[in-house]
Length: 329
Length: 163
Ligand SMILES: Cc1cc2nc3c(=O)[nH]c(=O)nc-3n(C[C@H](O)[C@H](O)[C@H](O)COP(=O)(O)OP(=O)(O)OC[C@H]3O[C@@H](n4cnc5c(N)ncnc54)[C@H](O)[C@@H]3O)c2cc1C
Ligand code: SF4
Ligand code: FES
Ligand code: FES
Image (cartoon, rainbow over all chains, first blue to last red):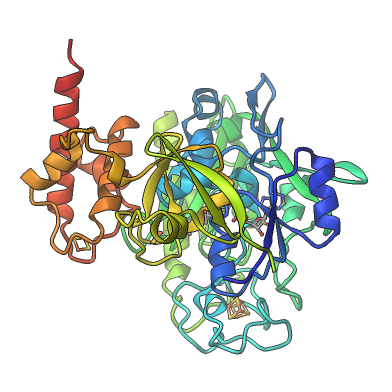
C-alpha cells in the first residue's frame, strides 16, 4: 500500500483544514483501505474522522430521524427506535456486507462508497473511465452479469453497490454536510450522480465537504417501507436486484403514497417513478400492480449477460407490493 | 515518507509499545511487529474474515484497520482467548468436539467471530448462525461442522451463565 500520513482531527474545522491541504477522509476504512491496497485510491494524508465528537448520535423525534455520519452500520441496524420508526433502514443494513464490516463501517463512509465493478478493481485492465477518465470501459462487451441496465452511459455501466442508499432514496432522506463555508443540506435525490460523460464524478459534493449526518422524514409510507434483496447466494453478496418499497393506502383502499427504489440494477440508487405514478390514486389490484411493475425496466439497456434482470425486477416489485398489501390487510 | 510513529496498543489486556508507519494495518502490526501470528491473513481485502479480532469487544477485520486507528482501544486476539492456565474457551472446545476445521487456516477468525456472534445473541438457530457467520469463509468447506460448533458453544455458554 502506498505511503501516507495519518491525522486524527479533534474538530470539523481541523478536518476541513486537512482536506483543504489535500487529505482524504477516513471513516471505518473498509472502502478506502481496500482501494488503497489495490493502488486505486492513493491517499497522501489520511484524516481519521472516527473520534470527532458529536457525529455519533441517533435521534428519532415525532417527525424525523437524525443519524450522525459516524454511526456504525451495526449500531444503526440495532437501534430500537429506528427499527420501530423506519424498519427498511435496518433491513437494508443487515443485508449489507458482513457483521465484521458492519461493525467497522460508518454511515457517512457507506454513503460515499465508490461505485466499482470488477474491471475497476483490477488495474491490469487499462480501460476504465471511472478509474482513469478517458481510458474507455473494459466492461462494455465484457462480462456484465453484475452491471447496470438503468442510468448507464456509453462511458460507464457499473452498478451502484449500496443497500442503505437504496432505502434512503425511497425514504426521501436529506444528506447534511459541513464545509468551511458552513453547513448544507442536500436531497438524497440530488446526491448520487449518474455516470454520463464523467463517471469519475460520483457525488454532488464539493471537495471540502464532509458528510455529517442524515435526516429522514417520518411519512406513513416511509414508516411502513421494507427492503428486500435478491442475491446469487443467500448472504454476504451484492444485490442481483433489490427493492426498498413504501406504501400507504387511503381509507377506501387506494394508493395514497408509494415509494419504490431499486438497487443492483442501476448506476445510482434508482427511484422507479413511473411505477409509482401508475399506482398512485389507484386500487392496488393484482392486475394494476403487474401493469405498473412492468414499467420499471421500460428504459433499461441490458448488456449481454444481464438480460435476466428485465424479468427479475418486475417480479421483485410485484412480489414485494403484493406481500405488503397482504400484510396491511 | 511518513516515518514510523510510536503507538501503544492494548492487546489481550496488556499494553504493548510499538513503532509503526501510519499505513500499517492492525493485522500486519500483530503479525510482523508483535509476533502474534494466530490472526491470519487470507485476502487482505476484507472479504474472507481470517483476520477477525475484537476491538472494544466487537468483531472487526484487522486487515482493513490501521494500527494507529485503534490506539488506546482494547484488542483481543485468538492468543488471548484461552484462560491463563491454558483452559480453552467454550468456543475452542466446541470446535475441537465438532471437528470444525480441516486445514485450520480460517479457524482463528472463525472462532473470534463465533465468540462475538454468540455474545451478540445471534446464535439462536442454525439459520441465524449461518447468516451471522457469513463474513468468515472456509475454503475447506467445513461449514456444517462450524455451525454445529457455534451451536454447541452457545448452549454451553448459556449453561455456564445459569445461576
Ligand atoms: C467484502 C465487502 C463486502 C461488501 N458488501 C456490501 C454490501 O453488500 N452492501 C453495501 O452496501 N456495501 C457493501 N460493502 C461496502 C461497505 O459497506 C463500505 O465499504 C462501507 O460502508 C464504507 O464505510 P467506511 O466507514 O468503512 O468508509 P471508508 O472506507 O472510511 O470511506 C469510504 C469513502 O468515503 C469517504 N468518506 C468517509 N467518511 C466520510 C464523510 N463523513 N464525509 C465525506 N466523505 C467520507 C472516504 O474518503 C472514502 O472515499 C462491502 C465491502 C466489502 C469490503
Ligand atoms: S463499467 Fe465503469 S467502473 Fe466498470 S470498467 Fe467500465 S468505466 Fe470502469
Ligand atoms: S484477511 Fe482480512 S478479511 Fe481476509
Ligand atoms: S478449515 Fe481450511 S479454510 Fe477453513
